Image (tube, rainbow, N blue to C red; front, side, top):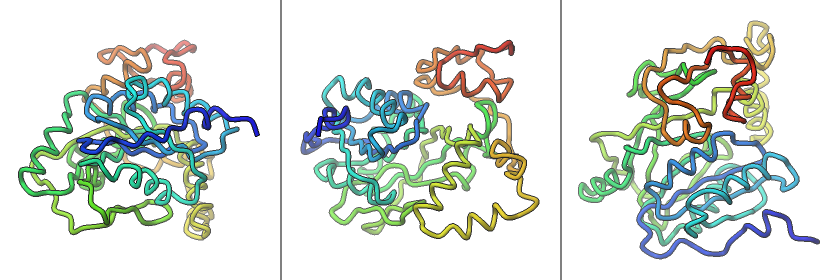
Length: 295
């Protein structure tokens, strides 16, 4: 069989022993419009990246995600391992990355729809964690909802949006769960002073969220919990997939957007606003709006 673009891109180079911070990321069939920004934002802190692209190589989403990975700064600096293994479940995919990163000191778990600020300085967090004898750093993410102007968080420190973010490598560190995976391993001691905050853009497009929920149901092999919600005659999704997030509380986002995001989409962070959902995807994919809305 002829080699595919993914075959040609895959590397066997593992992160060198003593790598201080290694990014672990998994990518599938779905196009990640924020991927270039996510990778660029991690390049300021990570010595290496291990990325598992486990989707169907013929899918357009895989091809475009792979292109962003190939063009990212860490790949150009030869600090990137690209893996391509068949998808079984989300924990299996993450564990593939973890196994390739065993010689690293710390692991950053970041998804393709999450973007960091340049002044976050993750190395300071892991230095403090090492000094205080901690092996995990938990942080909070801004959960953007339906636009870049609104979030689901009541505040920057809303505990509902607090998850483990950085992990000190350990031989028994592993992921479990087919979806909504969790990290397991040694007894965790969390750094408790000054938690990192980053941005999550996976719920900006409700239609993609709807598709994600259906993918989770298929992977779990038991759609009853999802079908129970979908069968509810009052469910907002019955108005259409674009309305599935209408019943969620949203609050104005008043902080600046991450620099890597605004640069990726060629946006002015001081003036950019999203005023209409029907032009949002055009902006995300092309960095510009072709409609007549005032941006």
